Every structure is written in C-alpha cells, then in structure tokens.
Image (cartoon, rainbow, N blue to C red):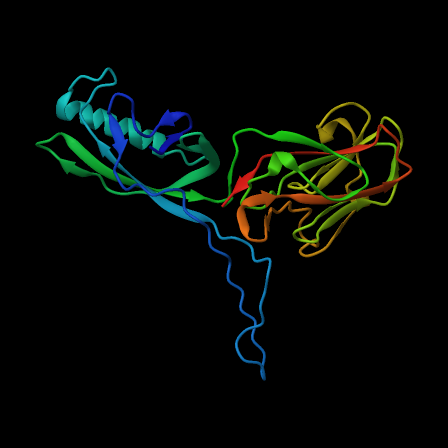
Length: 289
C-alpha cells in the first residue's frame, strides 16, 4: 500500500492516532503553464514547446481517533490531543517540509507547504474527527532521496547519464564538474538542445564546478563539490539554447521511440587539450512528474 510521511512522521500513525482516509490522492501530475500565441491570418495558435510546469496541489484527508500513542483507547479527550498533535505537524509555515511518498520499493520526496486545513468534522459519540490538509508542491517535481554521481568522457556525443535513467521530469539543479586539463569544456543536453561552456581552459588538477540550479560556477583545486571553496567564474560561463537567457542546463529524459519504459538523459561533451585525467561528472537526483 502507498504511504506518506511528513518530516519523518508517518501520516498513517503506527498506533492509529490518525490515518489517511482510503482514496487519498496519489502524488498528482503537474500541468503546463499555458501560453497561447495567435496571429491574424493564421488558424488556431502558434505551437509553443518547452512550457514550464505549474505547481501542484492536492489534499490529504485524515481520520483522527481516540487511540493513545501506546495503542490504548483514550476516548474523546485523547482524540482532542491527537487532533492538536496532527494540526501542529500540519501547521508549519516558516519553512518547507519534506513529504515522502512510498509504494513498495518506489520512494519519492518533495519539499512542500501546507496551504490550508479544513475545519475538523467531529463525531462526538465515536470520538473521531475528520480533517483535510491542502498540500502544495512549489517546485512541482518529486525527487529521489539522495543524489548520485556519474562520470563521463570529455569528448563524446549523446552519452547516457546512467544514474539519471528512468527519470520522468527535467533535472534543473544538477552539479556539473569538469576535471582538467581541458580547453573550452562544453556540455549539452540532447533532448532540449541546451549547452553550457567556458571559453577558457582548465589546467591539470583544476576543476570547474557549475551549479545549474543557482546559475553559479567556480574553479577549485581540490576534490570538492563546494563552489565556495574556489574562485568564482560565473561571468565566464556561456549558456546556449532554448531558455538559456534565464536558466542553465536542464537535463531532460528522452523516451526511446516505441518504448516509454526506456527513459534516458543523454549529454554531449567536448573539450580540447585533454588527457587521460580529463573527465566530466554530474551529481544530481532523478526527477519525476
């Protein structure tokens, strides 16, 4: 059975203090942010691709009981205490919370906020209550719990980033690391046609870190993924391709023709003056619609 936890707390309480009602929604699929462009003399609209996704919202409906945390029957008073504990969990507003969805071996996480709670519907005689929380996923996409690192060749077309296989959504916050020597290191996403490059060179022992989510870059001389440990070179990075004026590389899975189960992120890389020590690495978590 699928289950949720919020900030590590099961939303189906193990002692039965509260539980999600049957029929609670699966994590929803996001819609595209609509853009319509029409011109005189042309039927319909001009097709626009690469639309951004809207934030998703869905409801979690709980049944609160009179069970104590030890599993005993505490009656109406305990139901009130359980309701207070649940509303405290759902009432965090000063930060995003971590919502975890699990169905068998499938685990997805997202940063969420609770935008509203319904008025509790109380059944006094049964010592139960019903409450619905409205959950918003501002970042739209669900992710794996932990990041993985992939290592690729510095000069190769359409190589598969194996650690990002089976993603269904774009990875917008990848960390990319080039290890020198390399002149004009370049990396591109095959699905979207986006590219990132630095016109300068990297000496042996130098590494170029590019944070696609923050649109920042740095040169470091140690084996680190921390941009703060190096020299800022953000102004030396060129982003090319669709949407590049306001974002860096979005690693987007491509579906093989006729096989929706084959989803791969493909990247092309190039650099000159490389040797056996030159390489490109990507650290990221898979993303899901």
